[in-house]
Length: 425
Picture 1 (cartoon, helix red, strand yellow):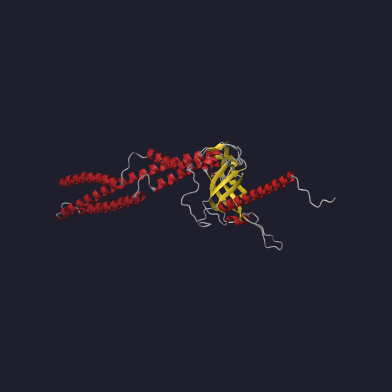
Picture 2 (tube, one colour):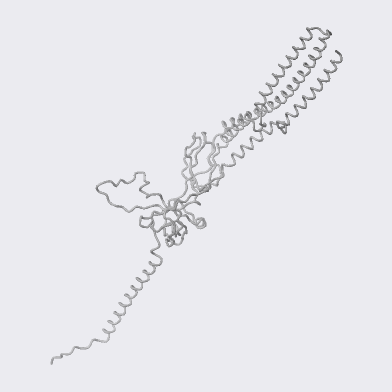
């Protein structure tokens, strides 16, 4: 007998189909939720983040080069060692520089004494002029008396003639003394011992000799690690030759190379999150964008690409972006030049120019290691001048007043002598 009706499905099959549908709906819903969540995340945050792993740590490489020629007699540091600013790295032979410095010191001392002699000679010539003036006054008085006596026949014409010759001689002597005084004053006019041209010239030679002597020791201009040491003991070095380098690892930054489309929304000051391969993802650095390269990497290459060819293929270019790091994070986890970095730039804040033209009024980098050399040289010059001066120096007005007073005393003495001589006549 034929059975036209189908047998109903077993309950287990129905349950299995319902469970499969529920799981498919659950998986589809999960993917939909994930897609929606990702879309919301991309809309609110991810689309504002520009990332690259083409980023590397960069830093200053301070070359140590001599300023004078010399023979290396000591090396104060080697590769991988840390040095502090001011520490002596290379010592050159000081024998020749010491001799030149001693000669310059002696010449300065000699110049100070010669200038002191000029001041003393000027005062002496001033007194001589006053004396010659007194002689001329006395000769004129004698001539006047003899003219009166000659009219009465008390003296001879020859004696009267001698009196006129004495006046002429006194006038000539006064003129010569005045010219000598003027010539001497020209050499010391409006100067003191310490600012006289001869002393200043000798002082300049002392400073030059001292700087040469001091430059036989090459100090570290900054604190950092020694790298690329090339100098050897006994080597004869010349100015400008590289001896070693210092890398201050507390001043490093990151150069991140972004593709052209990624630069559209980047601005200076935007926050940056960085990870270093050396520490892994557990250590994060924070920084900010501080500048953009003036051109692509290929534009500044040693051999720039030449695209004027028939088989040209467009390649997306990259532009270096400089990122400054947080100093405290850098001190906690030091970085070395050349290490790889993962960079994420938050471009939410997009105000300002893409390439701002900012100028810096203060030096970006500076060292005070060499400033003390000028101060020590100036102190050396002042000490030599003070040691060769005879106490406090008088000004020109005080010196002239003293000379005039001495001349007045001499004139008073001569005048009294002349009056007594007239009474005798």
